[in-house]
Length: 121
Ligand code: SF4
Ligand code: SF4
Image 1 (cartoon, rainbow, N blue to C red):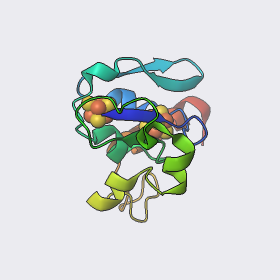
Image 2: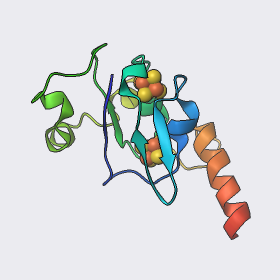
Image 3: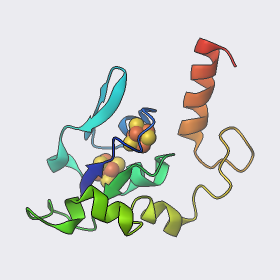
Image 4: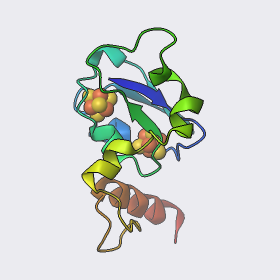
């Protein structure tokens, strides 16, 4: 189940909002999205795999982690290298440069191109 969205790591791309199949996140104007409906998370790990900044941690539990669990402790998770762990297991993001032929994150590329069209290169 989704447990942590790291504000320190997040680049506000809203890809997690776009890819989550059960609409767990809410976008926030000019800020990071929020985990608005944790109970709707189905632990599919898609958000973690797609996040271009390794800012999400999905715990391998089908229910929320108990209070005080290390699975909700952002600093401990970061120190243990748990952010983006599932993405690395999948092999996504190797040599990731948005828009390059090796970019395997089509949502990030599409979002980047839309931003470039809005703001110029
Ligand atoms: S996909 Fe990652 S970087 Fe983008 S908004 Fe969500 S948490 Fe932030
Ligand atoms: S793990 Fe799946 S269902 Fe849960 S928040 Fe991420 S994308 Fe949504």
